[in-house]
Each structure stands twice: as structure tokens, then as C-alpha cells.
Length: 151
Image (cartoon, rainbow, N blue to C red; front, side, top):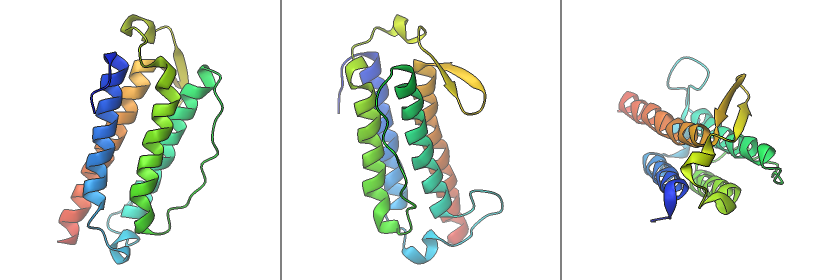
């Protein structure tokens, strides 16, 4: 989709990142969804996917806090792989709704909005959106690595 302005371009990239992430998840079967594949904290498809979705909602909520918008309580545990695609697109809708009235914000205003994040830093609006896009991409790469291990 082609949205207007800088914010629109960022949301186009976020949508593309979510779409590409779902392509990596699509062939996944339930058996491998919960299987421990690597060492460390996010060591299964399920844990990585759950982390990505929870983080995505947190980034949107961090923005909503600054702009004083109502937040949605997100609690799904994503027990089944069949839920993943729908939940990823719900996340996309939530981020789009978060930024909907900012879609035409001039780029020079992005830095006027400092957003504190849970890891004790502050990002401006553009940085946090870019971070949320790269977060999806980084974990998509992790899932692609998991596929290589399974083969």
C-alpha cells in the first residue's frame, strides 16, 4: 500500500515487515511451533513470535502514552500457530490506528516528541517507529535461521 508522507512511508515499511514475517511463519506446523530450537531466552518459534507481537504492542502503547491515547490490553498467549497470522495483522492495525492522525505530520516535528521506552532510553517518534520495524525484521531473520536448523 502507498501511504502519504514520511509517516506513511514508515507505515508502508512496517506493513511490509509484518507481511514478510508472516511468510516465514506460514509453513510452520504446530509440532515445530513450540519445539526448542536454540539456546537462550527466545528459543522457539512460539517464543520469538510472541515476543515480537508483545513488543509491537508495547511500542504502540509507548507512543499512545505520549499522545494521550487510549491503550488496548493485549493478553493472547499464542498457544497455536494457526493464531499467528491474524494476531500479526491485529498488531499492524493497532499501530496504524495509533499513528492515524499523525500520518501527515511533517518530518521536522518527529523530533519534538520524546518517547520513553522500557529499556531506560528515549526515542523520538521516528526512531521508535524505525526501531519497531527493525525489531520485526531482526526476528524474521532469527526465524529464518530456525528453519535452517530444522532442515
